Image 1 (tube, rainbow over the protein chains, first blue to last red):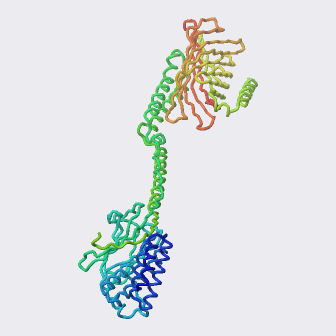
Image 2 (spheres, each protein chain N blue to C red; image 1 turned 45 degrees about the vertical axis):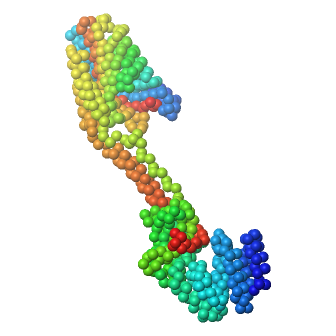
Image 3 (cartoon, each protein chain N blue to C red; image 1 turned 180 degrees about the horizontal axis):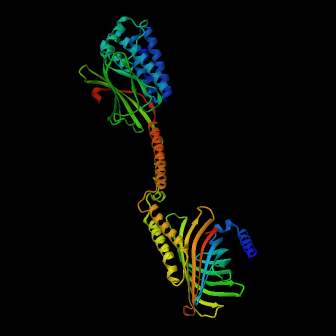
Length: 363
Length: 218
């Protein structure tokens, strides 16, 4: 075992100073060394390598690259499995249980290879998994969907049967929408239509999905928080059309001016034609033509007054104004419908980040 | 007489065709022509002698307007037969009036008015300078207008021995315009009365006039 100390120290020094790529390579090498030592029944050495591997590779777990993150999760889970097994064989059951719990929290669906590990190891793992209440979330790295029409789907996996709740929250912890509250046996699919509790789309920001595991009495045990970078794409709405200007409307009732002009003009002119010839040529026998024309002018004036009497509805103008109003209302309805379509056509782009586990005591 | 009428009509038509309608429509110039026919009734009284003449006259008229100013020309000729034993007469009449419209419905006119009464005995020529006032009113619908024009003789030169005491007249009637078209029609009553020699002689002419015409420009 002593022969491993020098290389371990050297590796630890290197792990603190070299670049992440070199560190990842070192972590992988340490994992391989640990597995090899475990196979050689060198459990003490195996535990040493594996712990070093876990410490060295811890940084990669929160990598922004989902592929790197997944590879490192698998490597970490493998390291934890072998470490816990080594600890069992070294006679450290408490350490083994703690390591298995860490493994369960890392991946609640993890199943040890029962051909590699004997029942005395897998039984401990099963017992720890049954006691640990935790949930992991599987979310698409990036998803685009229409608010209200399509759904953003998330899968929650439970370590064991327990109750849990899931909600979308702001980074400040304000709940926007409760997605699920209930039991989880193995897995549950939850959906989000992109709206908050008030039926409105959220603001573009980084929010978070919070899934909390609960005790049977409802006490929170631990939560997993998944950052969700949300971009809201709302199309601009059209301005409402201006109502027609007053100057475009025609008078709907006859004005008094033309009617009185017709009456006064007709009676005055007709009267003059009837009276004046006789007054000018009082000593002459005049013909009757003046009565015909004078009467016609007077009658035309009276008829003009009656047909255009003040306040009478001008039907053609009323219809023209109604058509003008209808045209504006039709345009308004078109704009309103178009705006409703545009407002309903909201696209959300959700990018999931790396989940973090928070024990209740840390909240 | 018929030959003269034909010449007048041809002259009016020639002047009308010479002015492009589109040019007139876009300018402040207005141009109106019309052809008229009238039944005429003349009452001549000299002392105890009274002569009634009646007949038909035909003629034309034209109007040229520029902004508020206007020039009216009118020509009529025809013949009238006596209802008694007197001779018939040919009547020729013309006038040229310069006008000014201070309001769209009111026009003041000034100009000469000439009339010749031709008979076998000889020709009487009457020359008046007249001042006129004309008013128009729309009678209910924009295309129907009533008009009334009255005048007074301010100066005269007559071929008769009696001095003129006064001369007055008036014309009124209805004018129908065709909406959107240059065609118009008018029917009116016209009369003038002259008193001479302290009432020893009076001359009164009445006309029932029907006119159709075209207007261009304003």
